[in-house]
Image (tube, rainbow, N blue to C red):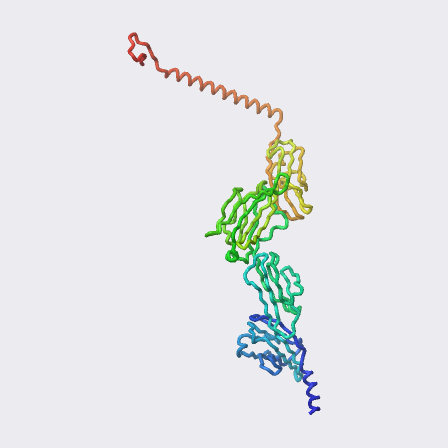
Amino acid sequence: MERFVLILFPALISTSGASKSVYAQVGGRVVLKPPAINTYKYVYWRFAKEDGLQLAWRNHLGGTGINKDEPWTNKLTLPDESLVITNLQPENFGTYFCEITSGSQTLPIHSIELIKLNVSVSPAEPLLPGESLSLSCTAGYRKKPEIYWLNPRGERIKNNQGTVTVRVTSQDDGMWICVVAEEKQVKMPVKVVGLSPAPLVPHYTSTSSPITVPCSIPPLITWEQIKAKGIHEVHWQFFPETSSGLISQDAQRLFSLSLAGPLSWKRDQHRGLSPARDPKTGNLDLTRKLARVEDRGDYMCTMKFKNGRTLNRTVHVEVLQIISSPGPHLLSGQQLNLTCSVGQPLPSDLHLQWFRPKQSAQPGLKSARLTIPEVSTDDGGQWECGLLQGETRLTSAAITLTIEPKLSVWMLVISCSAAAIVSLLLLILGLIIHRRRRRKMRHLRPQLCRCKKPKPKGFYRT
């Protein structure tokens, strides 16, 4: 008996291949791969034990067989040597064995442990900034693998052992990832109610361009979900830029959103701006066809909730403007000064550039001020001042110059003579018309006489 055991035990060792762990979720799909092989005659997949229930087989000629009994009905496919399982259920988790034969040789049996992952998020509905979020990622296995979470910014949450509880901010909106044993990654979406991120740089426009002040709700969050969080108030405020370039602290309320019945905007102050027509879509932008210099300043979009939490986004608007001295209408030979500015110094990574009319011989300059000592008629037309960041044009302002040719001395004499003659003719014509009117009136005047024996009423018409 002892001799038999000594023979059998080495046989067990030689037929048992390395074990591998694979992680999946209920309802998911998994591909179980055998060891890499060059040639084979048969491949057998079994469940629970080495000689357990046969799930599938395949031979080198392409023949296959699939177990279609419960709980494997419509779950198994064998496109090659790999076993594919879809719509996983709790009873499908366990140990799988892959046996490969190559001619008369049987390779070591390869085992794969399919482990169920339990991943959850609480609460499931969208969160407001400051509310608590709980994430859980656990493996139903006696040997606990290393599990950790990555936030939407790709940062690892330390010392969590698969469970995370945080107070969310707007940066936590997005896809959280549970990493299991440095192999399996499970993505879990988290929604945080917020407003579209404010631009990192000022929003540049010009007096020749439309103005759009952006503010919106993320597209994956519906207005019904906003209502469910207890929305209380939505409004726009404006903090104008003063002449010194500073932002005024005196807020001007522009619009308020009426939440009773159909959503509609109420205008609190008229500045010519128009809100988006249907705020239910999440678009809260303010627009106008052309920007004005007085539009410079900060615009704040605010949402208040009944629990006291407030969301707001501030957009700083800069308006590019061209000033012409002495004006847009000049005579040939006059000096022209063009100034392009947003009202305050530009950041170091931005610069201005002038774009002249095609027929003008003036050079294009990269400066805020352009001086032409003597303009010519070729300088007339549209001049543009572009605000650029590298090679990217952020916005541009335009002005149209009208330049008349310079009059000579003889042209001036002829013009003055013509004007004098026309004035004299008009004067003579006026005198003639005046005299004719006086004669006509004298002819039509009634003749009166005094009777020798007047009646009580005095004079009578003859």
